[in-house]
Length: 144
Image (cartoon, rainbow, N blue to C red; front, side, top):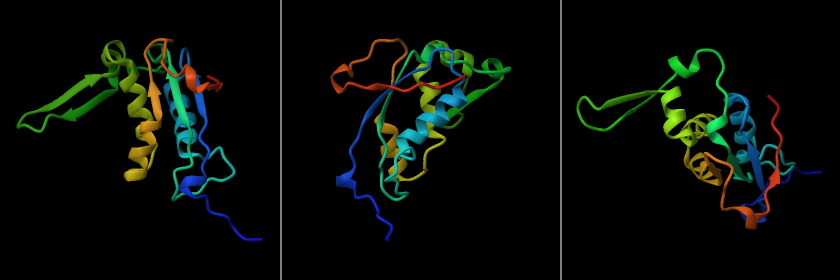
């Protein structure tokens, strides 16, 4: 018996929908990252993107534990001198809640071109309305 490697054109992609209301951010991100990588499939191959699409709804209702709302900060640089920008998780969750989930999941994906393609398969929406009903996403339950 030989090991079978998945080919890019043989991968059948599914759509999953995740309700983030009341779920801890880290638990949500690990499960979503695993599905984006394709680790939940038996045909998982590390050098081939075998993952599925994930739609995350109710991003504004995700939960952060401890003092992360006040103390956790997201930092980026504008590219200009003195352009270091910082925003707390609480402010970012109020203004752009989808960015909090994207940053958490992106940190758990590979830091290479394949990882940059994987993050594009995740769609995050602050409310419960999304335009992906035609894909018939299956609900995925996350505890916590």
